[in-house]
Length: 221
Image 1 (cartoon, rainbow, N blue to C red):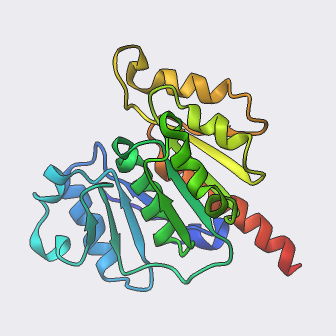
Image 2 (spheres, rainbow, N blue to C red):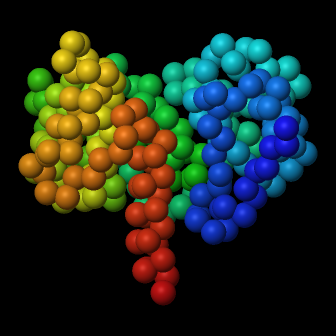
């Protein structure tokens, strides 16, 4: 089976192709890694590369990877040059860090300055208010929350920047694997809050990158 990497995506979209590792056999990942190792001019991001799969990769392709066990991401050939604009990645709890770190690593890979602000959920709203000025200083805010996902609505009423909600599968019982958080964010009273799929930290980061690309293109024209 041949693997075809999209080498032109960075030029077309302002971000290179990322390799979703979920569902791929280790031999196919190794084939792609061997191809990319020979092309150091093309940095690459691997997402959902779970520990058990990473541990089965041959050492000659695994060793060059910058692997993060929290986010299950890997970066090959370093990161892209730093860009203009910044993103806040805000989590309701530390249980949401896996998804938040997927967003953070995607932003890091694409050269977007960002700050990860964890554990500021509305159950202790004073924690959020202590960081609100810092959050407002960024151009885009990614809100990562499970349970009732109330943090997205609260920030939607406090921050005038674009807010991207990421519901997570964290929560008990009727949290229903993130469906309650998803529905809560979709029904948010925060005007203009945009929502990604459950646990999709990568997608939220890519949405933030598109927003910053649009802002930067207007500045330069």
